[in-house]
Image (cartoon, rainbow, N blue to C red; front, side, top):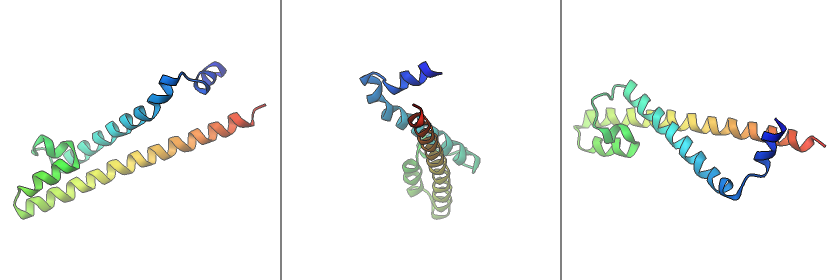
Length: 110
């Protein structure tokens, strides 16, 4: 376990540069997956791919629909986006809390 922690304590410069990008990619992918799942479960099975891919796509599709359908799609897409955003925020916060606890424990050791 100590060797694993030591490897993370002094990673190569290339790995340090990739950390933020990896986090963005992972959280972005998770958010997109959850958005897609939420929108599909809410009744968006027959929507065009751009509507299911992202909130902006759903809003663009809603502009071309009749008023009632546009309002329903907008509400579904915004609710799905909110759920996805909340998940990624809570997960990121939990990981940051875990990292701070680990850092505090490592700093207390002689």
